[in-house]
Amino acid sequence: MRLYLKFFSLHLKSQMQYKTSFFLTALGQFLGAFTSFLGIYFMFMRFHTLEDFSFGQALLCFAVILMAYTMAEMLGRGFDLFPQMLGNGEFDRALVRPMNIVFQVLAAKMDFSRFGRLMQAILVFCYAIPNSGVVWTGDKILTLCLMVTCGSLVFFGLFLVYAAFSFFTVEGLEFMNVFTDGGREFGRYPFSVYGKNILRFLTFVIPLALFQYYPLLYLLDREQSVLYMLLPLVALLFLLPCYAFFRLGLRRYKSTGS
Amino acid sequence: MITLQNICKTFRVAKRQAGFGHAVKALFSREYELVHALQDVSFRIYDGEMVGYIGPNGAGKSTTIKIMCGILTPDSGVCDVDGRTPWRERVAHVREIGVVFGQRSQLWWDVPIIDSFELIRDIYKVENRLFQNTLDELAALLDLGEILKTPARSLSHGQRMRCEIAASLLHQPKTLFLDEPTIGLDATAKIAFRQFIKKLNAEHGTTVILTTHDMQDIEALTGRILLIGNGRILLDGSLADLKKHASESKTLIVEYVGAMPALCDGMTLSEAKEGRIVVTVDPSALSVSDAIIRLAAQTELLDVSVSGASSEEMVAALYKEYRI
Image 1 (cartoon, each protein chain N blue to C red):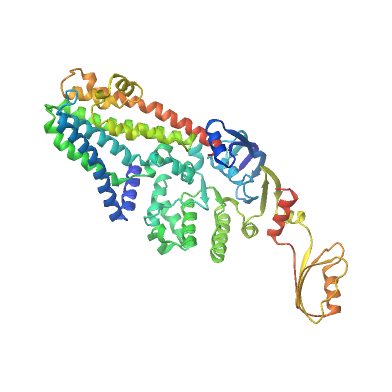
Image 2: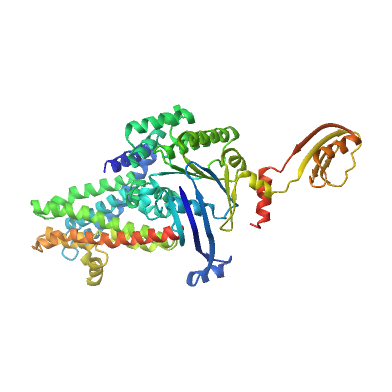
């Protein structure tokens, strides 16, 4: 952990060398996410409710997904840039260091300019938390925290899968973006609005709904069971196959070297 | 001690021909070609040895180094480095080795070198006092001084290379792998680098394994040469052994005034200019001193220089001999 903080401060130091670029990228990130926000806003201007979710409630979803995704991306950027690391031999360097590989890839890249998007998520939370009609008790606050942290870990798992794929092929990795970027964009609304089958897929295969839709029902008192509150934790099981897949890719890399 | 026994490694490389049609075809069915990167490679390197590992591009040098570093797993064969199998005990293994990839940096681009070094200290969990001592020693030997406070991006290639070498030695590895370390360095930097490695080997007994295309590196540093070609070890011996394989012929460069001297048996003309000829002498037919006497008898010689084949030429001849 101490070592991670060390990496963290080095990355911060490096990126602060280029302050203008840093703030412009952050601004760009903010504006990019802002268009998504406007999308929701205009949608609700016209229809007022969406499958009996109000504007404030949808914004809660939006903020959870945005924050979870952004945190995963900020800290797990190494996996996003993994094909590059493989290509330029940086990964070979990691293999001759006496440390866990996943940790090294994690620590190798961090992108703080995403904080523009993070700011947006915080702002949206500031609006959505009082306007969602949720009665904020201790367990509700805990649920929200679980949604964000577990969500970012699930996204992180997806990045891990993305990286693992790049052990096998360098082409056609774009399809993974359907789940990562796609998850972020579609997650602006509660996943139930996309229909039963999609919801089922996002529950059992790629558990994005486990930290978004179900705990939201708990927040809104539509489901009373504590299970709904704890489902984000269940979603963490997703990390196991992700990690296993990464190890498999690593094994293959070590035997093919490409 | 490093022991490699019957190491084999085969890569499957996708075959693709040029042209759009083939590119489309490759989407659906790919043809693969087997490339035997290493075939039955065996050798043994003792503690404190300095070994030059040479061979043309694509001969299998990097593959061997990668196997010894634990980056690659071979298809078959045994590799044992001080009792460890590199790819099975990666973490324990890499703690004891240092690796310099001449063409890839391990330094952080935008922060002062010392920050990179301290990070490496933490990665290897080197105790602070020990680290300071090692750093002081390396800084003195490699003349790092002020450089340590400069970010890598504002250093020259030579300065950065010195830092790379220091970075690989901060944890005092027993074995040092240098993969084309002198590439792109100027003459002074190369000489300084060689002196440093020699000193390191003499004082700390570090085993050094060096791949290079610069034969002067080999001449200056290594007592032993491993020549690899097409995935096989072709020669394992000293520089003198290598020389035996090369032709014995000598080259005479003669500057003269007056008419161009006539050549006799055992001499062949390889270059002729007004007042200067280059003659190759085959010592089995004609001794060098006889050759000079013959030439001197015919005309007035201003300058004569005699040289054997350079190591570069020897290696080129060897590559030719083994058809690699």
